[in-house]
Image (cartoon, helix red, strand yellow):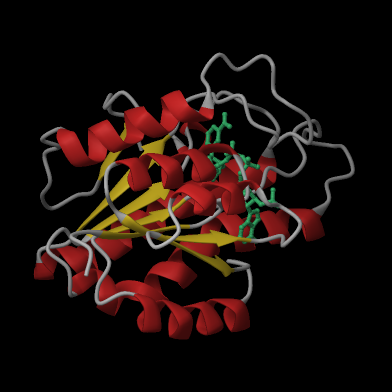
Length: 240
Ligand SMILES: NC(=O)c1ccc[n+]([C@@H]2O[C@H](COP(=O)([O-])OP(=O)(O)OC[C@H]3O[C@@H](n4cnc5c(N)ncnc54)[C@H](OP(=O)(O)O)[C@@H]3O)[C@@H](O)[C@H]2O)c1
């Protein structure tokens, strides 16, 4: 029996993988979910954390995949103190109004980024509510802020992250009645392969981002109440 239990989605690489590693270092039992079996970085972690890490396959864009994951998680953990919905995709960043916009692709991005976290949280809410901490962290983005929006493109991504923020608010309203909370988190501009190649314009490493996120979520006194918080990895608030 471990003291704390966490589940992180999107641990194939990037911020999700770093979050899983940081949580293992903090002594959490971690259920890590990956999309692609060929991505083996998470397996390397299992060499050091044999008993403390379970790896499940999960496509957060699929009802069936989430339902299968739910059964597997229920057999692994008694509750979930921390659920981190990290998995996400980018979509087109170039096209602006008047160009040939790819609405099929946008729907895919919205399904994964906007609805994926809700699919997963809905499936695991019972386990979250059975825990002491009852904390859900949705890795959103500054791109989800309507108040700060200055981009002209990135339609799928920005719309999907705004939707992700709204589901954070709705889920928070459900969970807070039973002592739970939701945090909408911008991880910073992180050097990952989300753009299909290493984003060398980003100065933050996945490890630095993950450390910051967990310090904000687990070590700082975030004011929690009627509304969820929308903060970055340093704890600074973003406007919705
Ligand atoms: N990097 C940044 O600067 C930045 C800024 C703001 C917000 N974010 C957010 O941070 C989160 C992590 O992104 P990252 O930068 O670490 O990029 P990343 O390395 O590409 O990580 C995204 C992860 O999600 C997985 N994934 C994609 N679609 C999935 C699906 N349908 N089901 C399950 N897993 C899926 C990916 O798996 P595969 O790669 O194997 O397909 C990958 O492991 C995302 O939500 C992203 O929107 C990142």
